[in-house]
Length: 243
View 1 (cartoon, rainbow, N blue to C red):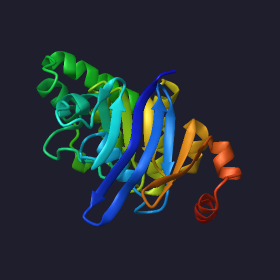
View 2: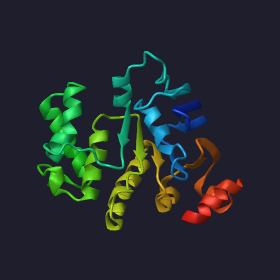
View 3: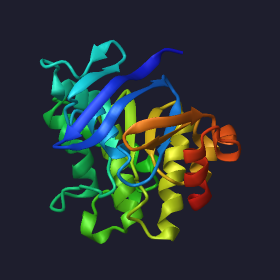
């Protein structure tokens, strides 16, 4: 399989704070990669740089054969190809679930109203919310809002999906409904880079786990190896706290 995402010696600074310190990693087509690490280790910054919400100070990021970090990169095209789901759901409160999903395809991709609506209904069906099509975000639970946010990202038919701690703002009983949708995506072959500490999801869906600390990749490996027999002491100390 080809590399769908390649991050090469990525460095990012916020003033004197080093957010990414020479990060190199790859995500193959249809691969699910889980990124774990303590708060402030650079996980979210990495995702934001892949989606060009932040710019690297140096290094390269590629999606297939397109370098998204070059100065004249087409940011609009990048955002079409890279779906992102955040901790907070970021839905438009004045639009229904259906309208939230159809907005970008209609405006960015110029997809006709009926086609966009049909696709949105199919995606709502996929995330188990077809009965909420005409409901506003304020009337939905957190788990339901996050599933609408996933459907909205999928509506652009991205090559890769980025998830930034998608369940961290949810009550425990709502976490499973979001993880189930993500598991289905993984089974369908969606390329995914996920920042999360949901170890059940990691064991069920992840092909590879990346442990980051202090803006660096400390260790990478399959879940069964990294969770049970990590090579690095820093990884072991971290896992002792969360497992």
